[in-house]
Length: 239
Image (cartoon, rainbow, N blue to C red; front, side):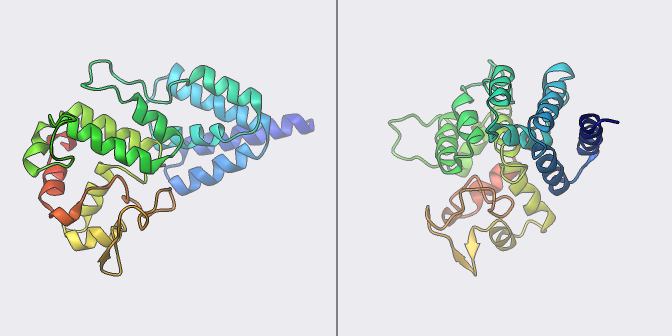
């Protein structure tokens, strides 16, 4: 077996292992190992992504987001060009029947500009609830939550989850809340909205990258009480 054939064999073995892995931590490790093999390894990752997203149209997962993020950061021009050719709008094809165009949010999240994505998410939620630009408030009451269409809320959540390696999103926060007996104080500390019992100050005390605790983003102003977030966690979108 030639050296190149041996490399290809090892890469193929790792790709199979990557697809079968259910651990995000393991997926990150394997993806990085494959990417370090240079153009051959990254070509194999691109082939995997095209197979999953375009050829087979498998339900999107955090693996797709991880591979996409890895290939986006490459310095190999041929890989960058091919990635743009296949996924010029990103990984998620947005339904034209949604109430708003969420491509701007997808674009910001692709570049992991999480603070800007958080601001845009709040703007979009207010619009979905019927608050226009002339409204005297730019936050939601708990009575507004039922006005949010399930499809749109689901798409916003999915964009956050896929482009954060499964760390951020409303459904992530909700799951943490549920698994901790719906205890709000526990939630604040788990997702890092409080630091040693004190609410973090916006924006500088929040963490705007994937080193943040799971569920840290997007934000909701818990200082107004828990009614709004409780209504969100009980929304029919999660049924």
